[in-house]
Length: 422
Figure 1 (cartoon, rainbow, N blue to C red):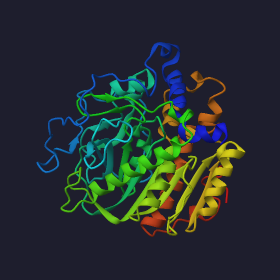
Figure 2: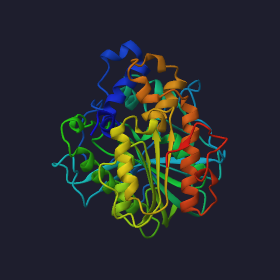
Figure 3: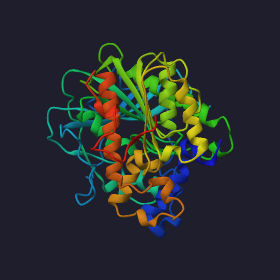
C-alpha cells in the first residue's frame, strides 16, 4: 500500500507532531512527544473514582461521569463554530468499563476502559459551557495549553430533552483525541441526534477522571506491523459495540441519565482509521444501520453490510492512486445505497477539529512546508467543517430519520467545491 494510503489511516501521530509545531511554535521542541506522553502517575486501570450524583448505585462501578475542571475556558479563545440549527446542546463525559473483555493492547489489564463524550439535545441553554479539553491533556497532546482555551457551544451536564433519539457513534483518527470531533458532535446533537465520541484507549493519550492520563502504547506500531490497521479496526469496532450495549441497556440505566436512544436508528461515523472502524462495526453489528468513512483507508474489505447505506467522504481523492484504489475496491463491495463525495481542496485533517482550530489560533504558518498540503489542503478550516457537517448530516437525516436530502443527489450551489467522485 502506498505511503499516502498508510498515512490516511494509521500515521496520525505524525500529524499530531506537526500540530505540536503549529500550535506551540519553536518552544514545542522541548515539549512532550505527542500521543506518547503521560502527565499523571499511573493508576490501576480498574480503579473507580468517587461516583458523582449522576452515577447511580447500579452504574457507579462501571460508569463514572467526568466532572468539569474548576477553571473555565478562556473567554478570549476561539469558539467551536455555531451549529446550523442553533438549538441548545448538552454534553457530558463518562468512563465506561467493559468487564467482559480484556484490554487488547494491554494484556495485563482484565477490562477494557474507555472515555466517551456524549452530546444530545437539551431544552435549555442555561449553564456553564463544557471545556474543550483540560490544560493538562492539551499540553500532553500538543505541547501547549492553547487548545484548552477553545470555547464549546454545549452546556455541561445539561438535562437531555425528552424523547427517543437516533444514536451516532464517532471514532477519531489514530493518535487523535475524541475532542477532535467536538464540532461534528455538537452539530449532530443540534440536529436531534444523541452522539457518543469514543477515545480508543492506548491509541492516543486519554485522560480519565482524577487527572490520570494513559499513554499511546501502540503509537509507532502502524509503521512496523502490516496487520495493524485491520487489528485496530476490529478493536475499535468492539469498542463501539460495547458503547451501543451500554446505551441500549434495559431500564434506561445508561451512562447519561435521562438520555434514551432508539435502538433501531444507530449509525457509526469515523475519521481516518475511525472511518475504517465504522465500516467494520457495521459489518459485525446489525444494529448499526448506516456508516460513514471520513478519509480513512479501509483495512478490512467491507462485506456483510446487508445492503446498508455507506457514505465515503474524501480529500483530494485519497491523495494518491494507491489510496484511491483502496476506496475503489471498497466501493465495488458496497451493495446498498452508497455515496462518494470529495473535497479536492481539503487535507486529511480537514474532517476534524484540528483544521479549524489551527486556523483559529493563527498557527497554520508554523507547520513545516511539506506537511501543510497533506494535513489541511488549501481550504479554510471552517469551510471544510461546514461541508463535512452538511453532507454527513444529510446522509444521516436520509437514512436514520427518513428526511429528504437532495444534497446527496446532485452538485450544490451552496458547496460548489464539493464534487461527486461516483
